[in-house]
Length: 218
Ligand code: 5RP
Image (cartoon, rainbow, N blue to C red; front, side):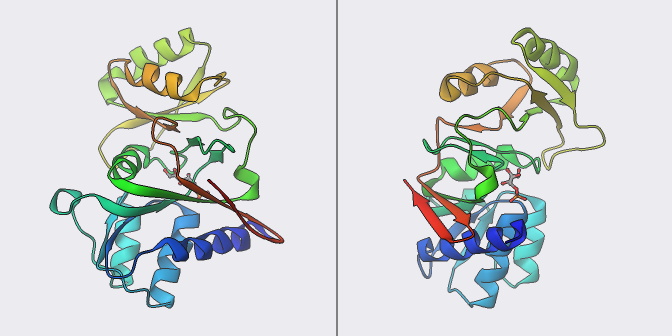
């Protein structure tokens, strides 16, 4: 079964976690695009969405789903988003699409984070996927040197600007033994907005699509 079909299966399974008539959090990426399309196709009754990117905002609006400002709503019952890598401990690497900061904000505001992935994203340990780090532009070289000093190999995602006007360093070869600790330590480097580790606030539910069905990990 091709990967896109698996992504749609994971997205479809997430519909069961959507409380009807409420505002929900919506992530970013090709898996979440299926989720947004399914919300519309199945006419799921949501009161609106808080979106983690301009791309998802545009897609939600194209389907006629109202997009709300997080400042105008309280905590969200659920946040649905994909990931670039996920472990059985529900730790994630995110930010392949560059939306990591807003994703982390919406995840923090949500009571339940449902992460939807195809089986290729499941890993015993994080680190195969280069870790995205969002950086204030003037600090790019400083942050890159600090990341290199930790054994990482930062690569500037050239030509890419985040929705917040910042740049991304994709850090290869990092040894991620303690994801929560590394997440905090990298966020302490001056100029780092946030990094793509989701371990301090991991997923609550991980839906992993395989050819024979969707596995639920909690
Ligand atoms: C965007 C993300 C996405 O969730 C992640 O890149 C997975 O994307 P896809 O569903 O396209 O594989 O973190 O910043």
